[in-house]
Amino acid sequence: MTAIVATNETILVVGGGISGMTAALEAAETGKQVVLLEKTAALGGRTSQLYRYFPKMCHPVCGLEINLRRLKSNPRIKVLTLAEVTGIAGSSGDYTATVRITPRYVNENCTACGECAKAVSTLVDDQFNYKLGKTKAAYLPNAMAYPQRYVLDPSIIGTAEAEKAKAACKYGAIDLGQKEEIVQIKAGAVVWATGWQPYDAAKIQPYGYGRFKNVITSVEFERLADPHGPTGGKLLRPSDGKEAKNVAFIQCAGSRDENHLRHCSRFCCMASLKQTHYVRERFPEDGKSTIYYIDIRAIDRFEDFYQKVKADSSVTFTKSKVARISLNEANGNPICHGVNTEGYHRYANEHDLVVLAVGMEPSVKGMNIPASVVADSSGFIEADPANGGIFGAGCATNALDVNRSVQSATAAALRAVQVVNKVARAEA
Image (cartoon, rainbow, N blue to C red; front, side, top):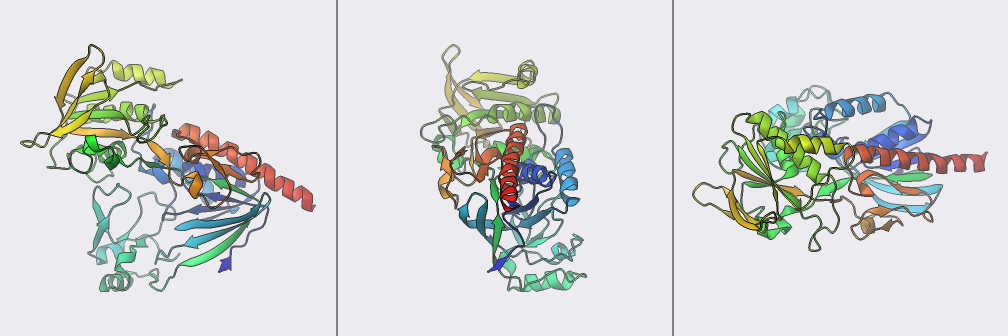
């Protein structure tokens, strides 16, 4: 076990998504030393997997690029990827975190030239695209990945494929001898920004996710729409590769349901409203979107965006919680069954593709965090004045959109700064 050079005036940020990056930058730009941990191979989190933001329909690349530029130029931030916290001991002002670092098998010599990927033929699930396709076992996590370094999938280590990758590298960047490391990091305060994960749609059995190929989730649809995604931005059905021109969006898929997630996930309505734009843009003449909803949550400045979508003749709103989905065996079309509560008419509507607006739950639930924190019934971290030095940020604390996640992260960073300032005064 080794120790990272850090002190009790260091701020440890766990999670390298938009919230973790924000917290690290805000703290470092006040002059504090920060260690930023990310359990995957690159920073950016789920924001990097979005095609566009609502309501402006701009691309996340802009904001991420600015944050990455700030981060790269700030010597006070040390970034560790493929790093996961396994334990936190101590108390406010004096924590020691135990961190497991998984080998990348690629060192700092990497120039991201891609020769290692060309050399190997083994394919693995493309995690960045939610397993909608395959990628080489030597891969760059995504086009904007930071650090801009390739990764070797552990499945090829010890095989001829790994040796091919090593032989192809001209810079001595492939290190097949890398081992898992356990390190300890001292910190005065901890910002827990581990983000969110989509609710497992397979648990919503009446909707047939996993059984019907043309029933997908909202996060998967986002990757389909992206020109850098698995289909080059074409809205193609997984079953047969045909264009999906008639798309159903089912709201509250797992949210506001005592059998699944009790809470409203807040962003789902806006995400589906946004995604109707993708259908309209791809098929301006004959594209059609149907939104099945209980209520539409479009608060504050989002109301105008909602009204614009409502005015779009290609979008139909059906006030109903879809009861079940069946399959037209002849053409692979999913059929939504339910009752329209505006008039109480039964329907059995056939679509090319059904998109489930799955709910948001914390990636690491409060009860699983290796420290003493208070969590609500959904696993989100609650503010705990008695805890003193560990602060939740972003979607670790609640179901939030990007804007509110950034606000939450800024607040958490300022609280962490106050703790280490108190430590500094006590030692002066």
